[in-house]
Length: 330
View 1 (cartoon, rainbow, N blue to C red):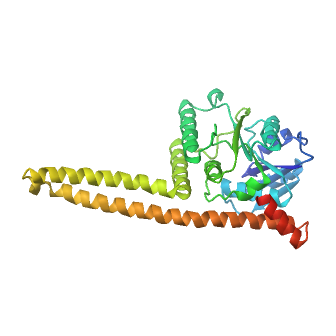
View 2: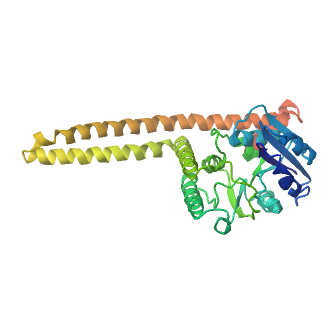
View 3: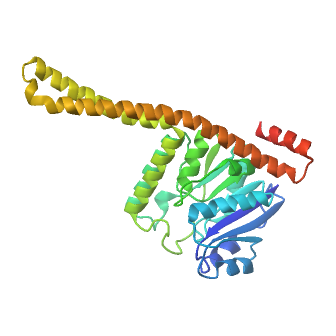
């Protein structure tokens, strides 16, 4: 059993000496533990510092592509190196590395495919009251959107099985945390939360530069991913709003028309016609998007099988590779 601990980095030459020495080289249930650092186009000596601190592999982006891209690069590199389990942690030493074993154990026991560390948000001193409330609300919304029981949705401290890592696709350039949970929930990937500890704050978060901006970008990510994985429900909600508005306006106009006052309420009739038209268009878009969603799920399944075939092709004959990939997919 091989465990790869990956750290996405951007200009983390100063924080890596605090974070990397805390990482374990031995974890119960794992025969090999390796460290992987993804340098997302840093301007400082992040790559050199990571190598000096004992990173087994450093992957570099030529330019800064964002946290989500660095995360996905790490997953791909870890899978390519033969990882059975992948743990993602931050370079700012936010998470207590001693809890990596807590993340990995449910996967070893076969109880989960993705394990997310739940921080003690209420007891975190450097989180403001507003940020704590927003974290709670955001996690609640993600639970509704994903049909999971994730306690701390924005947490980047998480573990993945090899198969779960191969099935994930992140489209956002901002962050991967919310998108991967919603995607996992709608792909029937077993997700579990475990409590983890945190360390004192080294520096302000680079992801949350502004509460308003963070809320806006997180909300837009949730809406977009929900529309991707539940398009019929998403567009039906929009259609229901306009149809109800149209029926209400139409009823108001008819009531006044029968009372002989219809001439003064023509605007209600126009609003009713426009609203009902928009509602029907939204409903049709929902059906079309739902049909496209079927194709997307088929393509995701094909992509997963191709990745599995690539895995076993390096160590088996062609016939054995196809058989092994089918067995793993089942």
